[in-house]
Image 1 (cartoon, rainbow, N blue to C red):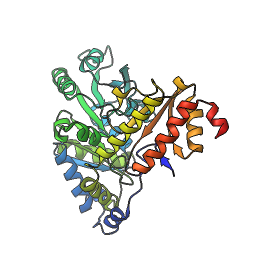
Image 2: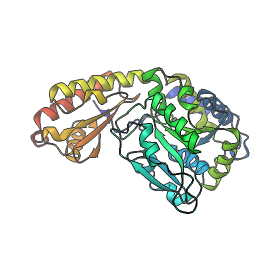
Image 3: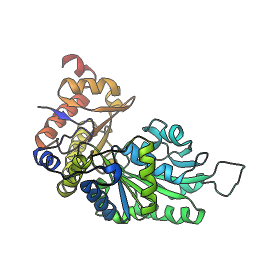
Image 4: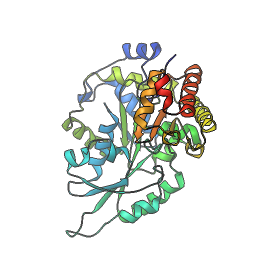
Length: 352
C-alpha cells in the first residue's frame, strides 16, 4: 500500500479524461483557432464572473500575466510573506517585468484588508514606489489550505478602488474554497480585476491554468503570453482535460477535505499538539512533527520508507495534501504510518 501526499499536483489523467483529450477538436491557438481552448476559456470566465479567459500552460504563468497587466516596471505589488506569487515563483515579477514587492506577515496566510491597506502607497509621484496591485491567494498553500474570508476580500476591494489599486486572485485552489464554503465561484471572482485558477491540482488535469478578466485585459495578456514563451498551438488536447475536470472533479473535492480531516483528527489524538484541528479547512494538513522530536526532513524520509510520501515545509513541519488518487484505503494506510511515527518518535526510523 502506498499513499502519495506530496501534493495535489501528482494526479494523473484517468481513462475517460485521456479519451476526451484524444478526441478533442483542435486548431492553432496562437491564431485563436482552437475551439476547445476557446470553450474552456469562455467557460472558466463565466464561472468566475468575468468577460474572457486565457489558457496558460502553468499557474505561475497565469499569475505573472495577471501581475504584468496591472503593474508597470518600477511599480510594486503587495501581498503576504507566504504568498505563492512571492515565495514560489522564483522572483519572476522582478525578473520578467521589473516589478518590486513588499509583504506583510499573516497568520497562516489569512487575508486581512487592513494588512493590505497598511502597505499601500499611492499618489507620491517620483518620491516613492507606488503600489499598483494587491495579491490574494485562496486557498492559501503555505498557510495550510486556508480559506480567505469573503468579507475581508470585499472590504479590501472597496479600499483598493478608493486608492486606484488593482487586485489579483491567485485562485489555484479556489475550487477547494468554493466546495468547502458553498460561496459561489463568481462571488469570489467578481471582487478581483483578474483571477487565475489551476486545472492540474485538485481537478486532476495533467497541465494548465486559466487567467480571467476583461476582454481588453485578456487580449493584452495574450500578447504577453507569447512574449513569455507561452503561446501553444494545438492546445485543445490539453484544454479538453480541463473541460472534463470541470464536469467531473469539482464536487468530489469534498472527499479530499473529509479524508484530510479524518487523518488530522487521528494524528492530533495520537500526539496532542501535532495538528491544530482549527487550521484544517480543506485538503491540506500541516503537521508539527517537532513536538514528537522529529525534524521535517527525517520524518519525510521515515514516512517514505513506509510507503507514505510527504513534504517538509519547515525544519519541524510537514505538509500532507489529499487528492483524487488518495482514496479511503490509502488514507487508512497514511493514518497508520503517520500516527505510529509520531507516537514512536525518531527511534521509529531505526526500527523501520
